[in-house]
Length: 91
Image (tube, rainbow, N blue to C red):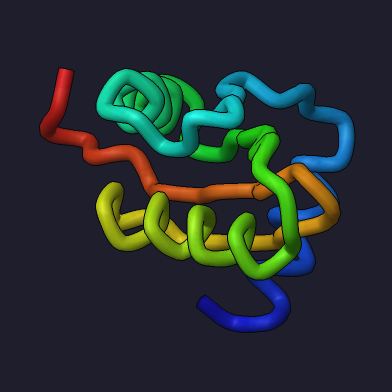
């Protein structure tokens, strides 16, 4: 993903509210399922990561990206912006 694409997606995500929240127990199977459903429906989502420490949140954001095949656009504080292009064949 190019820097220009990331900049455009950050601008689009600015007005979004987090649609998925990962609590203190981390990224459970249910959280991953909710993220998958949100990405299928919206393409661009915000996820609130409630864990302690920036490095832990960064690992969680990278885990979300790798498991979902999505791109991590931005991580600011507890909010991760995730993007995955919709699969036109899926319904």
